[in-house]
Length: 409
Image (cartoon, rainbow, N blue to C red; front, side):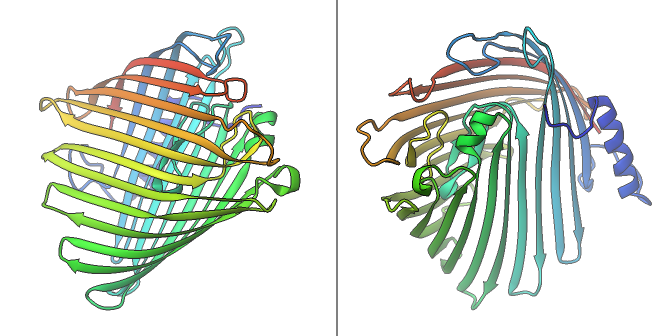
């Protein structure tokens, strides 16, 4: 049975959002979309897409044209020392199966809030919720983007909170806590992959100069699986110590670097160790043009797919994103992500096979704005998963081409 929140059609969802926004903004006048003081907007997109691998499989590939509709609502509220912002994205696509029909629904929710308790003390909260079918990129250890296993519809929910306290003009302390959960709808995928993670991070930051901040950090994380396997081998906890540097070279170029080491202990008595690193370089080369490069190395629990025989894996990730304004009306975005994962800790301790997989995701999109209400979108997405042991991790490729129209209010 598919999860459903009772939204029968995007047009009805758009109507509900507009009515909710009218109630929430009672006493306020509706403003034009281009108004810079506007605190909310709604957009609806209708897309026709060709998908050459609906079910993400090596064999028995299904390909056809798929119709997708999407409704997105953004809003932000500022009240004295409180700021709250959020975005909800609902999508529906048809058909789910070329032969059987049906439809898929996706729900994406992002919420963040910040509150200044005093000039020295601030607190924040954020949540990311995804309910979808297609492969997605989520933030893993050390902020590395990892690809969710393609095993049907899943739910990913991540929450985090933080406290920041300024001790002196140069010294500050921060505490961050996080929780996330992954649940699959398919019974076999759920049995192997359903789990939740907890983490706590302590940081001491020092401002060397107006452009440079360094920090000493410690993170504790724990993973708990619904079905942890023999001797609870999938359950484990990690300790990571790392140094961090944030450097703003000029108004256009900035760099963030973390580097340290992770020790992961499994409840079956085994231990894995590995470097933990994260680097992000962002360059603003125009008023609305940016390019960013992210490279990460992390040790985490294994994302099994169909293996179920390893408790840890080492991930190396590189991600590049470019946003460019071609003309006053035409914008382009391109992003590519490469992830190399090696399964490092066999559950039974005697396996000689240590598989690795490689995932490549590439996306390019164009957006042409006719006016403040109407725009056209075109996108191409490519995904490729390969494995050194295809009998353990099923490889597949997928191409998705789409074009559509977006209405914004």
